[in-house]
Amino acid sequence: MRLAINIDHVATLRNARGGKFPEPIQAALICERAGAVGIVCHLREDRRHIRDEDVFRLRQEITTKLDLEMAVTPEIISIAKRVKPELATLVPEKRKELTTEGGLDVIRNSQQLKKAIAQLHDSGIAVSLFVDPVREQIEESKIIGADMIEIHTGEYADARTSSARKKYLQEIQIIATFARKLDLAVNAGHGLDYTNIKPIATIGEIEEVSIGHAIIARAVFVGLERAVSEMVDLIKKRKT
Ligand code: PXP
Image (cartoon, rainbow, N blue to C red; front, side, top):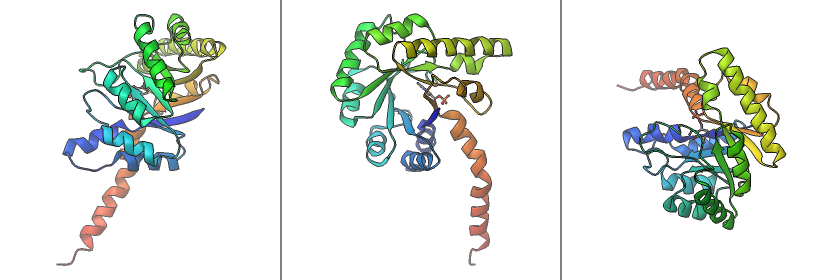
């Protein structure tokens, strides 16, 4: 199984001060050096974290692949067609949500999604649909021309009991097998972290996971000691 890393949170931190740092591109290059096979970013309609210029810069400078998460709107589709990421992952987007809250309703939005997939395909962009592990949603994804699905693992990650978690894991396994039979490529993501990834990693049908929050959050603690000691050194060496 391969790992793609979502770097939206680096942009959130940058935007908190309105300046340039930390730069998402720098984070992306570190992720690539550390073994990520792709960089994921979500250009939201409200541009709360990643901005247009970040996406264009990522496109130019990363050497793995770019997965652009996006809502199905004419504006974002037109940006995607100019950026030409290797993969566009279509997600539902609500203005007030803290993060993507669930999978697409592919059945209800079938015509709109079909049109978007065709437009993106015209520019040579492969398309993945972020979906809950529900058989009918996967069937419809295939019918309307998706290349891939990303299974929403949020319910699995948020499960409060081990029996609930086991049930969601089984659903994910069954859906991953079903999707592969339909010849859809299968990714998974949302809420995956250092404590819940192992069972997901045993599902051979899932080719790639997309993880953001847990990795960027851990990076703070893994890196904090060095960050503090570098500053302590600078302070001690100051000339009066
Ligand atoms: N996949 C999709 C479609 C997402 O919207 C997100 C969140 O941006 C992720 C994966 C990553 O989720 P997390 O930040 O919880 O790892």
